[in-house]
Length: 326
Image (cartoon, rainbow, N blue to C red):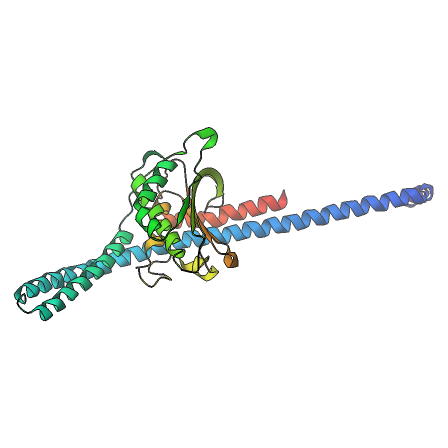
């Protein structure tokens, strides 16, 4: 022991001032590197924890929508039957009162009100139905063109300019295998929502931008995967954060009219394809951006979403631990 201490003292005595300065610089460099690495790891862990929370929220939303769909189906079925009777009796009564115009007009008002209620019930039934996907090969360009054709009159009536920079790599079409009719329906709902968001007279520059591309996206299960991403952007007033968190809830709407089921149906359709929806808003700058992210080849969701949710926490937690110890 005494021999070791003597040797260390001799070594220190041989070290000059320059050697000590170099040693201190090395120690300081290593310390800074460790601090930088620690800060980077903390940031990465925080990012993964945020992604875990977002993924859990998306899965919880899917399960909630499924439960609400079952409840809505039962209610809509019970409401539709008496509505049909009311419609029939009002028509019969209107025919009997044909010689009394004022009373007959009251019957007509009842019929119109019933038609409005039946339209709402139809939307509820559409939301509540079991979404069965029948995939077939198509292209992103074809789906966007079909959707624009469906929404052409609405776009024209609101004087909206459409920018459609849809381009595949090297000029090739963006191919995918999905249920084209369902995806067009989802696109219709998002486009209508975007156009109506720009309907305010104070918005002069009304531009709807549609695009599609193959890109990597973070999925609800925490992994990154290649997706066909349909993007719909508008120059409207933007979306409040509180609304973003609730906009896919059935019957939630900020409009004066409508059932509030449009975006809930969008979520349901994309979820049935094994995809997910991203929403961004520019806040005070205005404008919003919807991304419908779909696998290139449709992978319909299984009903066992609970099993998927159970494995999600463990999967992302393992990723956090692995990257933290790497």
